Image 1 (cartoon, rainbow, N blue to C red):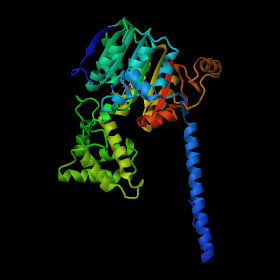
Image 2 (image 1 turned 90 degrees about the vertical axis):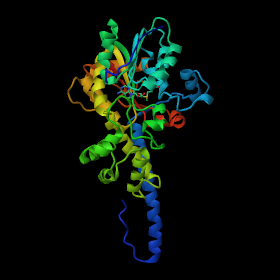
Image 3 (image 1 turned 135 degrees about the horizontal axis):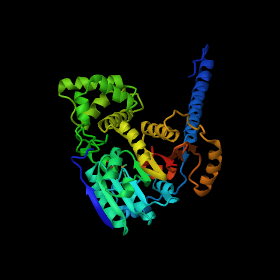
Image 4 (image 1 turned 180 degrees about the vertical axis):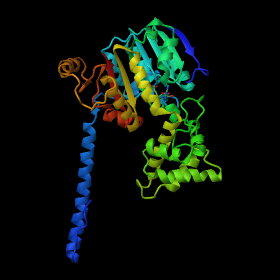
Length: 423
Ligand SMILES: C[S@@+](CC[C@H](N)C(=O)[O-])C[C@H]1O[C@@H](n2cnc3c(N)ncnc32)[C@H](O)[C@@H]1O
């Protein structure tokens, strides 16, 4: 094993209409009928919505064994597991499937984290010659390095690089290795969002459950913090991020209260912000705990803005695709609808070569029929694909975690996996 470089980069930055009721009996009868009908309607509607949701995704049928994953990734018994120090990789078996049919000479993990996915990929691919792990958080590197060391086999060139994945092209260039400089990567993974270590550390400011500074930076060297947005951004910008990044319907009131808070010294801790949200959220909205849902949306909005997550993601998807070798695959796990929409639309744009396209549109019917069957025969996880001139989307519908994984690893609940392959 050769750790060629650990590039630290301070310089390199990174309805029911009511019935008309006359008479008591009919009132009683109608009222109970109405209540029942309401309940049925809402049950039916819920079932319909759930079915529609299921149809828009492919639920994984992979077995999820949490203990085995902890043992496999961290070499420790699950009794020793804590979310402060370990991050259970989401949809691990599904990610391994994506690359299982590929000879993986080179692999880039854009979101190294605690190296859960990476260690499993390395173990599954003895043919691996180049491994690049990127993360903006030094804490992730500190955790990942020993785990990588424990699984790396002789002859693998390893580059762990503290850098934003938006810079993947320059990072590959800097390795100085011709194979990577030629941008011929067989597999790339992006596991978006935060690691358990980041969420569960109150000092990072990501969690609605603990008290800490209003920070929310993935990269501790970055200058913008959530506190800066809340206390100094123009009112309209605060409103815009709550509306666009948090999809929060009560954004106007929240904007007003956040700006008013500046007159009394501003907001400086997550509890300051949570107290404000609790006061502003109507008591009946979303039930007794409705304010927590609002808080989750507000925190999401701030995190996206602090880390410029959507623009970074869009740019990076194009860059990652450019870095793939022919036949190479890019797998992306997203955790909220804005991210997933971005991945879906960008993949469509990539395969079609810049022209707008409707989802499910077939770009090349002949190619579609032959290669669909071929692909599905070889790889059972591939269900429906979308072909374009530049590549194939191997997940017309995103893959979501098995019911078992959702139950045992709550953080996986909103995960969606999409995969694209270069021609
Ligand atoms: C969900 S965690 C990855 C966990 C990892 N797959 C594992 O199994 O341990 C996401 C990681 O991506 C990092 N990250 C987020 N945005 C990034 C960016 N733009 N560039 C590089 N790393 C980023 C975060 O710091 C975090 O460590």
